[in-house]
Image 1: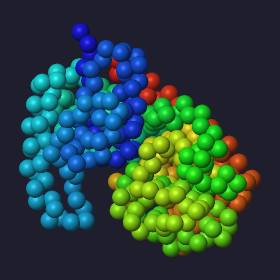
Image 2: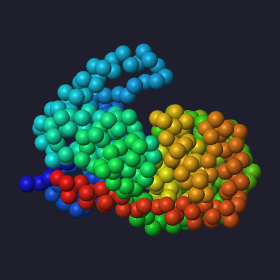
Image 3: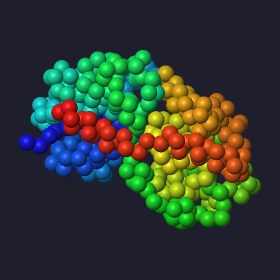
Length: 359
């Protein structure tokens, strides 16, 4: 009988894209496997997962809102409702295993599966264990981690260091710089900076770029700028040296075109940048749980594999630093050489193999 697996989680590209990479690797190793995703209604996974060819069930769940306590009034009811929804999904689908990749929907799915003694797996992408994952790891069969040193969060005997699954379209990309520049209709003679704040955008990065936008033209540089939905209307338009949009669907072309990248330091952004071997300036999101984005970035900075600027200093320092790096070929090469050593390209296959071994 065909194996059945639920993959639960989402919220941002950093959870969704590795989840899809794991699903694809499972399918490659066992074509008959039946995979169902569980996500949060209204979140990005409800769109991206069906685009990748998989079914998804949405839960009515949200996280704790730190900025507006009044918005948390209905939270207990949402949590209860999500557990009832998960119970229904699991009873009907009858999975052999549930894999949690982080995000709101991951917790109720894994918790209910564990109560029913279903095999469970956790993928922790960051270099800091999330509270829900720490709690769930006690009963999980295996915890896959993006890096080492995670014994302080999870039972050592359950940890398997796999790295973070990077989308196959990026790992196997053979797109040239010329192809990338052409895709964005930019000038092949100019140095190109890619600006991305992750799938949802990054306020401080966007504001810093907007405030100093003329510096790029002055230094004969061009920009590929992913703003996120909230900033797209404020982004500079009509300049021939700037391509801008709220989301870049074909990131493999953006990476190919870029000489330098400005990025948040979520675990998946870091993993992708190691694979594509690009000189990068990280601006960690300071309000991520336990400030894990700073921890992620510092791992590379300490190996001279990336530069970092604090979020609070972005407005003052980011653009001048990016311009300086874009004009310094020797420093770019040094960063490229060092970041290339940290690339992991087969995490999805390793995870899929271990999951299938244990169910």
